[in-house]
Length: 89
Image (cartoon, rainbow, N blue to C red; front, top):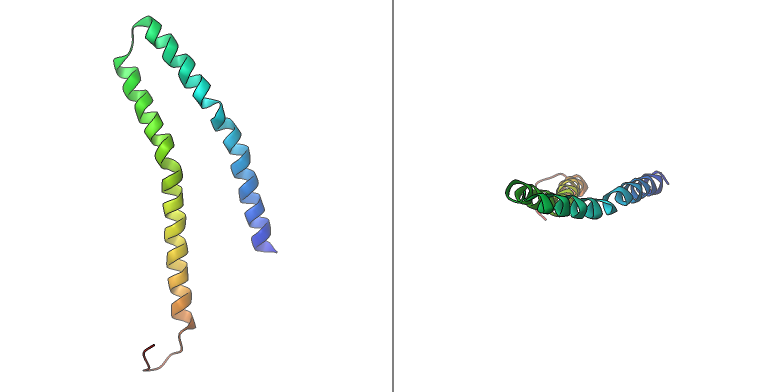
């Protein structure tokens, strides 16, 4: 039951924070259009590209961290399940 509550809590938090990220695309577009009309393209384009790459890699980085801890925890559980002794499995 505790696992279900924790999973539900994480899902709700992720869904609520995801709504804020949907608005970023319109904000970037309007800022880009404003800067393009003023003639400022070099620095802003580099910053915009970095922001896009940051938003692209963040979910994959989080997934990799979760997968690492899951793998490490499963390896510990396998070691704890093996019987002690001189036998090799």
